[in-house]
Image (cartoon, rainbow over all chains, first blue to last red; front, top):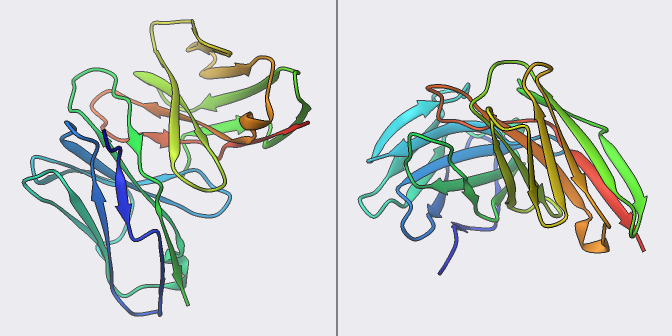
Length: 114
Length: 111
């Protein structure tokens, strides 16, 4: 059973460019969340998708957008890249529940903006 | 801003010793989870404790939760070199779908 897969693993972009990161959730999971982790910090919540809708959003500018497809996979798009967007981007999948939810994380995409 | 804060920021111990790290958080929670991260890669879920639980065990891990003090501790017994990693606590709250992470504790286990 494949876990959460993210692509690409590493990416170098130039300031001002746009980037798309991809995530396939763990089999059977229907909810995808994205986190940004700066060096030496804990992950920060960007947004969560469920039933192809953005269910909750963290404190990130509109340059960060996402999408969830009918097969539950998801994309994170970042426009007008800034140097400060350099970070590890983590995708987490889970199965929707009204109770406690354990999230399964992918290995992340390391984005470097130069 | 981070919801939780782990203490200490870094910990170095000898193989076979126990490692204890603490997490404090600011607002009421539903659940608290601990995750491990190796070398800046993906996070691995270790244990989840609900707000109405006080202690939980999983293998060599023991987690406690004190909601009156808004704090939790993670104990790793008989540490191994493979336990070298960063450990994060994460909380979730009522009507809140996100996990809020602390800045983590970096644990180094020396052979």
